[in-house]
Amino acid sequence: MGASLSLVPLIDYFARREFLAAGLRPHSVTLPYPDGGSTGTCTVHYWAPAGEPRLPPLLLIHGFGPRATWQWRCQVGPLSRQFHVIVPDLLGFGGSSWDSPSAPPPSEATQAAALAALLDSVEGLKGKRVAVAGTSYGGFVAYWLARAAGPRRVGPVVIASSDLLKTAADDRAFLKRAGEGWSGAHELLLPAEPAAMRRLMEMAVHRPPPAMMTPDFVLRDFIQKLFMDNREQLTHLFKGITVGTDKFQVTPLSQEVLIVWGEHDQLFPVDKAYSIQRSLDGNARVEIIKKTGHAPQLEDPARFNNIMLDFLTPMAARYEMHSHYLHH
Image 1 (cartoon, one colour):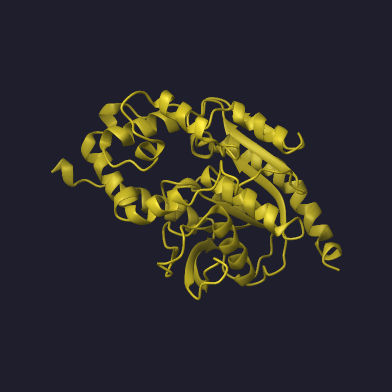
Image 2 (image 1 turned 90 degrees about the vertical axis):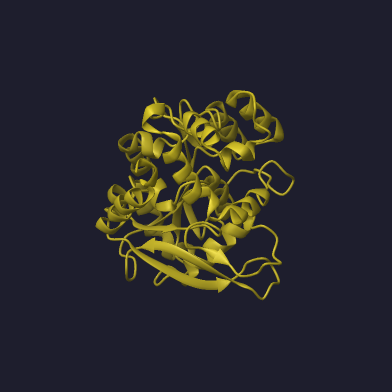
């Protein structure tokens, strides 16, 4: 009987309840697929309050792995009191998809272009300045969106647990930290077996649940619903990542930047936060959250939220004040 237990719908329920309680509602919009020539379209699913924004807009971009509602469930309540929060599913995740089978895998640039089109389509947001925060893979997209759209469109930027400078050597070091027996980073980041899922959890979270709390049948259920039901699409997306190639060059941003990292992150070690700061000409602010790993927004949400609000609130007010000036 235990093997039939599924925690995924329960977590879904509580995560959605946090979003609904924060005043966010699910929406979707169909847009041209941003691959520079295809006639295909994409559907972008997102959560946002209904109606035109009365607060400064803030875009929260999720990473690889669990759904966007799981990754930002501890932020939407506190942040929605001061911001018009928009939480999209990136292409290939959750309710977002594309209908162009001949298109190459969506890169971070493609994801960013889809989000820019989404922002232009949302009531009251066209041409409006938006603060952006991204975690892990979402940080790659947030950086690309900020650089491509520029400071007239994107205001302050938060890069959380996101190694913009990742290289093949970093992947090899990640596998070394993971221990022997893994053929590549994809085997852990897209787990297909309980052993890989358990090791990923151990590396992603500073204080993972004990093994007795995560028996194989529970992990198999998570794997099936999070990584197997849409595995072909996730594998396609994984191949589209351009960080660490000539297509993803990190240069300083015009916007003010906050870098947030977990002190014990084993996926992207904490020293990379300072490497990214240097690559941004040393102008970014760095905040390290103690006793957390790769998901500080879930492991210490109170501290993470306070850091976010301390950075964003005064800037949002300032950007809002000057938005008319910048567009005239």
